[in-house]
Image (cartoon, rainbow, N blue to C red):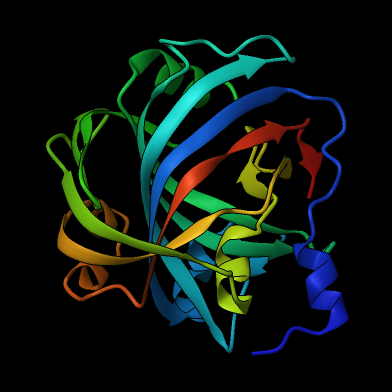
Length: 246
């Protein structure tokens, strides 16, 4: 697929304005399954629709390490602000053409950020026991949910990391999102912009996939088959700005 100039512009980073959060995302495995757009529409907040590539949208399972969350430009917190995370996410676009992600769940290994995220921006964070182990080119991520549930829902993903490669149109579609869509307490949809360098991407293959996090969100059939697209990134530094009305 060749993108036209309008699509390329929509994928370009925008200014986030005042810095609200800084953080680093490290050692990410990107597992994606292609699905019809109508399947994910009920999960998206008002005013957004599924973003598509060649007529399909994607469901992502993304385990990684969150590092040193900082507030308002302050230095990142080394303990509370660093933790394992695995998210299940969808891809959205709003009426202004802003492409983003919609998180169905975000499992994290540190309780304090989970509580803060649920009470503040109302992101669907959950507290889980998690680990990440690397042996040579192989990386294994594990997750077992603690609270609020369903307790015991688990995930184990092992990928083998290959050579670095230049992102193509699909890789840009999956990673160059520059924000997230979420509904506030009043049910109004907000867009939360972020900015980061272009992702350094590596080829990857799945060696093991035993996942229940997708099933909890209604996508259990996806975990029963191989992902349609897999890649890995060592990570990027990220800035979040103030939330905007979508």
